[in-house]
Length: 341
Image (cartoon, rainbow, N blue to C red; front, side, top):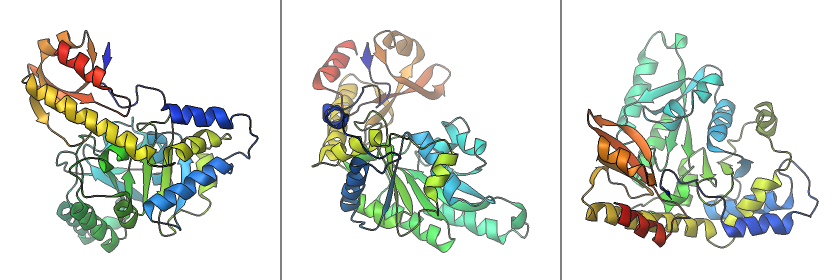
């Protein structure tokens, strides 16, 4: 069975497994105070061009979104996101379960628009009854989005400007950030994200790690006693080295970026094959997620030999499906898919 359903269907890159094996028998302090976590944090600060950033390692994306949002938001605040945003749709109501209301804006292929964000904030504060409403306290973006699309630097700058004007924190979900940064058609760098956001995270789970996300707080925005909050949320690993060692390996040399580039190159080959075979694109992206429209009987037949994600209905007889590549996708995988298609 060919696996194109997601970008976390393989284990970990060998360099990370080697790092875990090499460090396995060395006693280290717990809770992220080990030398590998400290080293990884320093390497991430250097890559972000943010020497004073606070870096904290968590295990997974949903956990990270909930822990960060619940830490940076006051009890009377919610998170503004696209109506297709991951925290609003595909996290089983985890933010709401933690007491965080999601406040949605229209989705433009997964993205929000700065002018619509500003209009939303203006309407909120113009409402005489806004004290009886949930305040917009943060803006949640994902880059790439759930539809594989990317914000431009100008779009991020405009959104950040609105956030500053209305005192909303800007939080960027970077679960697939490695693929976004390595896209051939992006003008956004890691340093740009660090300069524009209040907090973001660098995803490891989908870019070569067994698990793990690196949360980066900029300009002193990490809430007081954040570690205490993490523990209250049940998100603190005693053996923090498990994640720290992996990120130390990912940010040694340019491995993280090389793995992102591998996923993008595979996606470009995948896109060429889908076009060659005459598939109709629902959304053609510059990242590792490609969305095509399949007739339902064709989809059922293809599912016998290929795993992909059923995304959403297109019409009564067609479905949008997603093919995803990753750091572990090989040329042989793409050729095998070509033969099946």
